[in-house]
Amino acid sequence: QVLEELQRLLLPSLIIPDGRLEYLVEQALLTQVASCQYYNGTAPHLSLFSDFSAGREQLPTQTVDLLDAHSDEVWHVQFSHNGEMLASASKDSTSMIWQIRPNGECINLHTLKGPDTQLTYVAWSHDDAKLLTCGNSG
Image (cartoon, rainbow, N blue to C red; front, side, top):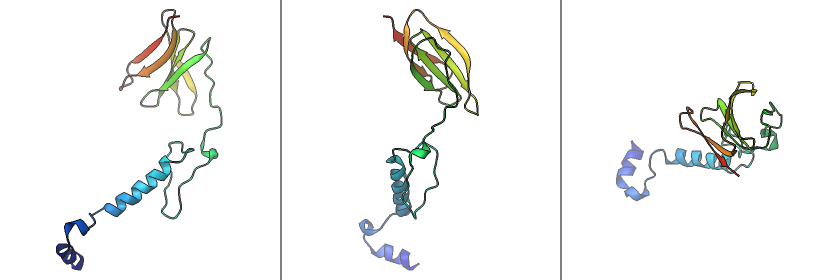
């Protein structure tokens, strides 16, 4: 009640809005994560007692699967929005759709053979129902 009475007596420009401190602390923590070059996207436990830091040990360093079905260079890969599939575009004129299993293993679901065009890019539609490919014809 005393605080409410003081707030009524003070100019509005002198009063800190409700939730402002919480917002500033959250913003500071997220800025620490965003500025870390080794942050790998998994949500860490953030603490007010120490600064956030991540080292090279946070980066994946073990090969889970080798995608060797293309017969020439792979020029682009892209994960689907839901993270369950991976598409690849290759100089061999094919695009492949891979299913990502929970253990990280990739299974070739489809091989899309286009005209004699070196594919340079693949992109998923927002609902992951369609795949765009483009490339060079020479």
